[in-house]
Length: 277
DNA sequence: CGTTGAACCTGTTTGC
DNA sequence: TGCAAACAGGTTCAAC
Image 1 (cartoon, helix red, strand yellow):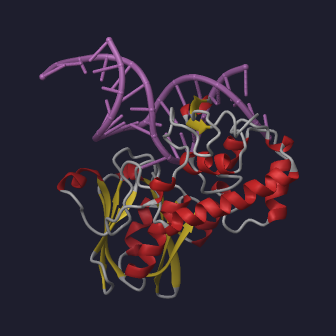
Image 2 (cartoon, rainbow, N blue to C red):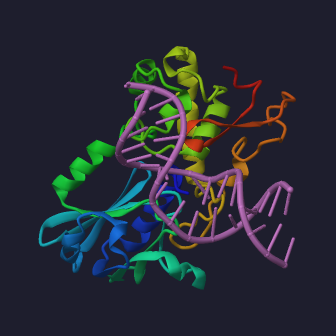
C-alpha cells in the first residue's frame, strides 16, 4: 500500500488527532512484528505523544516522558495501516500492535498489517539516528534541484529502480514511479546518467507535482489503503498509467499502455510511444 | 556499483 | 463449482 503520499496523509491525520495524548498502554500481539527495541517497550507507557513525522514511507511518533524523547517507528510495508478503530470485524485478525491513548481525541491507535511486510520499532535518539541514516536517502518533496540532478548524473542504473531506491531517494514506490515517469515522458528502463539535463528537470518538477497532488487527494486507495479514520484516498482516479494495461494512452497518441515485468517482479506500466528508450 | 531471483506473508482475482 | 496460478502499495539478502 503506502508510498510517500499515503504515509504523509497518515502522519497528518495522526498529528491532528493524537498530539499531546498520553500512551496509557502498548500491547504487542506478536513479538516478530517488532524489528528493534522490543525490550524497551515498557518505557513508552505513560509517555506523551509530542510529534508525528513521515520519513520515506514510514511514520514516526515522538514519545516524551520526564524530559526524555524516544521514538516509535511504523513501517507500513505493502499492507500496513495505522487506524483509530476497527472498520470491520474482519480487521481484528491482523491487528499486531494496539496503543491505548488518553487525553487526546482518539482512544487507541492500531497497527494493522495482514501480509506482515513491515515492522515497528521502539528506539531511543541514537537508535533513531542510526535507523534513519542507514535506510533513508533524501526526501523527494524537499530535495534541491542540484542534489537531484547530481543524483541522476552519477548513477548508471535504470531510472525506475533509482526512483524507488529508498537509500537514494526515500518514499516513491511502484504506483508513483510509474505515474511520474509517464508524466515526465521517460522510459522506466532509461539509464539514469544518460538523461539530458532538461529531461531531468522535467522529472524533478513532475515528481514534486505528482506527489503533492496525491497528498492533497488523500493518497491512492487501490486495494485497501485507508487513512487512520477509515477514509479512502481519491488519487486513484487521477492515475494515468498504473493498472491501465491495454487501455489507450491518455495523451491521445493512439498507442496502448503496456505492462512490463522486470527484475524483482514489479509491474511497469508505460506508453511505448510517449516514453521511448 | 548494479542486476537478478528468491524469500518473507496473506488475501483476492483470474483462468482453466 | 473447484482448484491452481497469478498478482498485490515493500524490503532484504545472497550470488554474480
